[in-house]
Length: 206
Image (tube, rainbow, N blue to C red; front, side):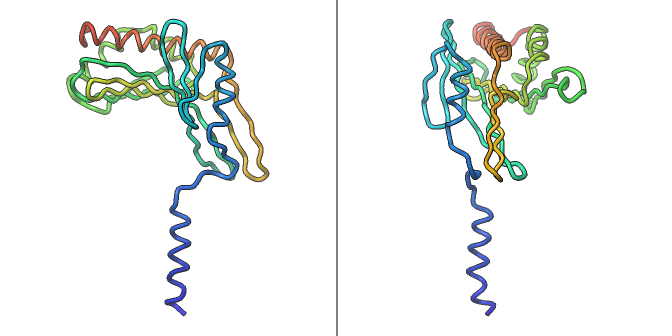
């Protein structure tokens, strides 16, 4: 009796531990709404769960969706990515959260690597108060700036351009990225592109 129960328990454990898509999740469907929020900019689907937005000034932003399970529901969030080349040699990982949303005041960056390039880039960033002012107005969950092997990546997760889907019954609520929010997001990404372009040409000197 005990031996016969072992395979059943093993299958049950495997089912619980296997990563599964939430019920009602349709990969890439929300990106159709995100693309609509970015009109009239050119949008192109590059995979079922990602698209690129090309701005007139030549900036190309990749949008990736990610589903996260909640209790009896899940949320599909948009992650906005920008990347470029850099002369920085050491790995850099900077993370920011908006303290204004949490009632703790202001945007603060945390440096996860203690090497020289990380500290210098953070010092350079602190010399651009207009970036912090723009971030104060940006309704974002997370912002990550990463450097590795001559490349840099910026990732911003916005509270808008997201969809909450309840599973019982299945109901969808999309939070639109309004025009002013979109402009704030694009302005911030443009600022970081200009900052990293300057770092690439001049080095990390404040």
